[in-house]
Image (cartoon, rainbow, N blue to C red; front, side, top):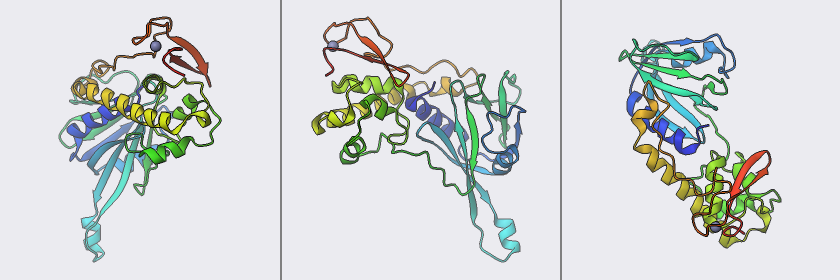
Length: 282
Ligand SMILES: [Zn+2]
């Protein structure tokens, strides 16, 4: 499943390729799961709109769309104003957005094709159909939670105050921080020296300070790695190319800790695998 750094990388790659493009037409498939908004609303929002920006919010990719209402405004005797809507894509487990030439083979599990004025196409492909396409009509999409790369220390500390849940669960709670997933939560907790099962309420301000730094560090490092492979990720054969951060604990159960050589442990917290070093993390 793509996590925040992958989504950031994909959004940046898409921004480079399609910002400023105008949408000619839209084809949407018959499968209903990927369509969180009705098909006609998605098509109406996209068709004849200009893609003003592409950015990430949490794990969502947001396309800011502008439609120049100059013609209708002039007819009504008002000044021209661009109406704004947003097209929102969540990639789910296996969703991908491809930018390709129209003659490229349409892959199986393609659920949307957005035809651009340049002749290129933006396609949404998703074999497992956990991905979602939707529209925010007033451009007021709210991804919930606070952006982990932007949160200051005081607000970060406040998020966990009084919480009796394990810190790992709190990190994954999208209503608190948006977009921190399983891998980066484990890696951040390792760097901060905090066990994933520790109750959030028992963690000192000083330790939360370390965690605040660690969360930003792992996400930024992963984004920096992803940034070098943007082209591969969003091209037609988009599955390859995202260089992952070297995991220090995630997925390394039984392997020696990179710091102290103690075997890494795996526990399940709220149904998710958590990896930690029993010596380095308290
Ligand atoms: Zn260790």
